Image (tube, rainbow, N blue to C red):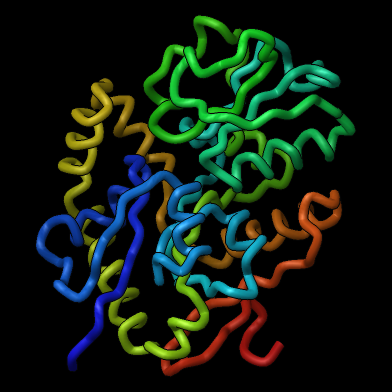
Amino acid sequence: MTKSTLSMGRINYINASPVYYGLDNGLLPDWIEMTDGAPSVLNGMIKAEKLEISPVSAAFYGMNHKELLVLPDLSISCDGRVMSVVLVSRYPLEQLDKKQVVLTSESATSTALVQLFFAEQGILPFFTTTRLHCLEDIPDNTDAALVIGDAALTQPWERTFEYRIDLGELWQQLTGLPFVFALWVVRRSHARNNPQAVQQALELFHRSRQQGYANIDKVIDTGAEKLNLDRGLVQTYYDLLFCDLDEKKVAALELYFAMLYKNRIFADKVAVEFFSEPWNVRSVHGPGQ
């Protein structure tokens, strides 16, 4: 079968490394063109139709669900503490009413999650959004800041902020459920026109992830070297991360979208819909519902 090139995205944080291990070590076919980027960059590229398949922020999927389909059994998620998505603060969470909270520009999901927590508690901070990669990026009048990804793991935020609030842990305390930060998606138009190629890409992802967990010691070593972190810390980080998307995580995702809608952070209700092949759109409630 002759395939045209499929444009695919890859998150440039170490949290996605288990999913891409096999693709980075011999599985990547010549008909897939890979582009690295932060979640916000990949979000924009798939929105602009510069990518056909990519990991995206879960909230970005929710905001663009009419154009996208979720690829089954792939995510970046946690069940409690996550370590790499944190609100660093000078005050306890409940004391941030009318305080200055800076949100990272790199993740729609984490930003919406912070807004959701405050809305659920009736807390009304003043929000601004900017790039947050290091302490020097923090404006002087900041009372709390949302930091994510490798920067959350590597930067000495405790020099400035007394409190470190883990958003995965906070969500579990609120709901008792895991949390899904990122999903792998395909553009609906591409799935409709190229279902077999999308299915083969999905199978490659699953094989690549299988190899990643079979070689998790190498993944840990690479992550520790890349970020210049203690290996034990990186191992703990990967122990907390999940890259599957089981029924419990889908239920958590649906609850997250429903809560965003209830609190008027989302304008529309969102149904999670999956790609399946032979070509079909499958909702979490089953075909045709």
